[in-house]
Image (cartoon, rainbow over all chains, first blue to last red; front, side):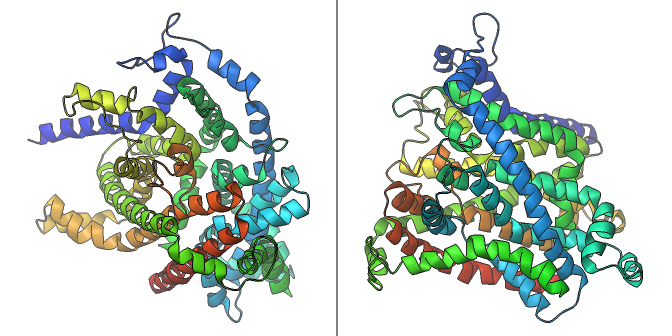
Length: 277
Length: 280
C-alpha cells in the first residue's frame, strides 16, 4: 500500500512539472517552427532540423519590429526606476517600523488602502498632464512613473524586513549620535542587503511586466517591450510563430535575472508573508 | 524633523505624481469635452451604460472565481509539495517560472494554446475522445470568460502554492508528531493542524489575489481584448477603451471615479480593517 502511494506521488510530481513548464516550452517550440507548421494538425511537438526548424522569426522580430530597442529601453527605464522606488520607500518603511509618533497606525493603514486604488484611474489625468507638459513617449516620464508608483507597495513590503531588524543595534547607533537617516542607510540597509536585492528584483519584475503604463505612455522613441510584442499579431493575420518568438525574447531577460538571483526572489516573495501574516 | 525627511518627502513623490492627478481626474469628471462645467451629467450617463455595469459584473465574477480557485488549488499543491521528502527546492525554483512571464506574453501564449483549429488543448481533448469537433475557446462569450479564468489560475496558482509551501514549512514539526501519537489520520491532521494555522495566510493571500484580480487588464488585453461581444471586458479595460482609445476622456474619468469609490471605499476599507485585526 505504502509502495503504491510513493509511485502515485512521483506520477503527480511529474505531471505537475509538465503542466508548469508547458506554456514556456510550447512558446519556445513554436518560436522555431516555420509558420506553416504552426497551423498543422496534429501539432508538431518539437522543432527538428532542417524541415521543422527556422530562425526566421527571431530575425524578423529584431529587424522588422522595434523589439531590441524596446528591450533596451525597458531594461534601462526599469532599472533606474526600481532604484528610485527603493530609495523612496525604505525611509517611510523604517519610520513606520522603528519610530513612535502620533497617527502612526492610521498612516500605515492608509498606505495599505492606497494599494487598492486601481491603476487605470491614474492614467487618464496623467495622460492629459503629461501631454500638456510634452512628456509623452519620453524616457524620463516612464522613469518617474515607475519610480514613484511603487512607493506605497514597497513601503509596505519593506516594512516586515525592517521590523525584524534587531532594536539594540539601532539603539547603539543612536548613542553614537547618528541621525535616523544615517542609521537607516549606514547601519540597517547594509545588514539587510539580501532583503534589498530581493525587493529590487520584485520591483524590477513587476514593473517590467506591467502593460498599462507602457501601453499608454510610450509610442515610439521610448517604446517598451510589452506593447512592442503586442504589435506582432496583426489585424487580419495571426502569426503564431512570430508571436512566440516575441514572447521568448520578452521573457529572456527575466529568466536570466532569476537564474542569477534565484534564492533572493523566493525569500523576497515569501519573507514578507511570513512576518505579516 | 525626521518624520518630514523620511516620511513626508519620500511620500510626496507619490502624492504629486499619482494622488494629485487622481484628484484632477475627479475634477475633470464634472466637465464636458470643451472644458465647461456640466455637474453630474457624466455620472447620469453611467446609469444607462449597460456596458459599464456588464464590465463590473464580469470583473467581480472573474476576481471571485480566480481568487477562490487559486486559493483552493494553491493550498492543495502547497500542502502536497510540503509533504514530499525530496524535491521541495526543485519545485520552488520551477514554480517561479510562470510568475516570471509577463501577463501580456502569457496572454499571447495562451492565444496559441487555446486556438480553436490548431491549439493544443483542443488537440489533446479530441484525441482523448472527450470532445467532438473543435471548441471555440476564445470565440464564444461564456467560453472566453472561462478561458480568462483558466489562464489566470494557470499562471498564478504556482506562486500561491509557493507561498503556502513556505507557510507549511514554518509550521513546527512537533505539532504533527503529537497529532500522530493521538492517532490522527492525514486528513484530520490537515483539517485540525494545517488549516487553522494557515488561516491568516489564506485570508491574506486571498485578499491580495482579489485586489490584483479586480485590477485585471494586461492578461485580458492580450488574450481577448475584451471580446467576443464585450463579454470579457474588465472595468480597467473598459475605462481604457472609452477614454484613451476613443478619446472620451471626461466620461472616462467619471467611470473611473466610480470605480475608485467602489474599490477604495469598499475593498480598501475591508482590507485595512481585516489586516488590522490580523496584526493584533
